[in-house]
Figure 1 (cartoon, rainbow, N blue to C red):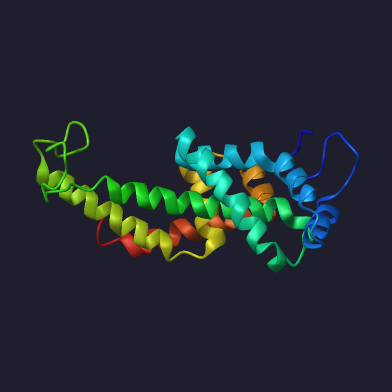
Figure 2: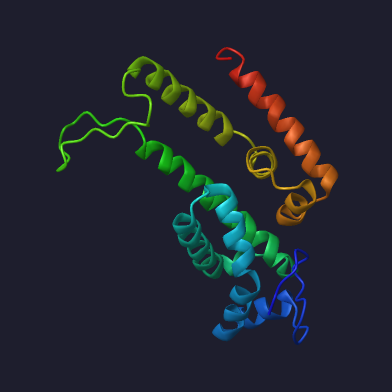
Length: 198
């Protein structure tokens, strides 16, 4: 079965997300398999756009479904399963990006078996520049983390990953105007927080 951005099945029996969620909550695991079938491609696409790495995107999308299953009882509006799931995907992807950024920091311990220091290409002879860029990256990550969830996700999906506003609106379960407002407000807050560093 293919799934459109609206969260409604494009073909098939016409079973709604609400019906499937209720079935899962009654203990019918096959209903969750149907939800996975509906949203797997979408979840993977959002994760890939945020991570730009197919292995990470696959792992994050799988983790998102596991988390969605575990937290399904907390979803108040069962019809919004799709947008709720994609918010989970976005959050896990952002966490993965932060974790990946930390792994890129220079290790000077010398405990590695290979005896190598892994540095970003082209920066080996510029430790001061690399240190400044690492510090700035951490400052931006901290500022992003302080944004309200909707503002942070709208900014990442639209401004960082170039996803069209209409698609962002459907992913976040809000209007296009709301996306514009979230992005505008997030940019303003970041600019204010980072003015001493820019």
